[in-house]
Length: 182
Ligand SMILES: [Zn+2]
Image (cartoon, rainbow, N blue to C red):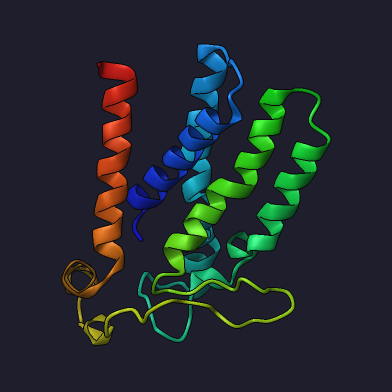
């Protein structure tokens, strides 16, 4: 899933949490929760920075993945989020704690469709995925532009993640229109 899909999933998670918690937050608090959830939905991918800087190459290969870094470990976000929620002095921090857990987990669900996430780490290093990502043979293209175009083309035409990403973006847009424009 690309960053827009992860951002949309994080936004929808925080919106759902706001609705389910049934707490009367101020508009500033509600806005902060929506913004925090949106960012938290994409934050696990911050490991692209150490991934690319350690490899000194902008190319993807099938044998290496940025998802081996700790920001893609579900148990980390579950632990930090639950501790925050348990010691929360008020409902605002309580919802933020739940969000620290659930928004990154929306990211991992998106990654688990085809790419794989180490759901059982540190007990197991196995990557769990529902399907298999389309063939990456285009990743051997000689120029970076053709390399990335090949990846994007394969993603849009063969991946089951792409239609789900479109649904997430449309749903987030529908919520934004309903809540803020109508
Ligand atoms: Zn990811």
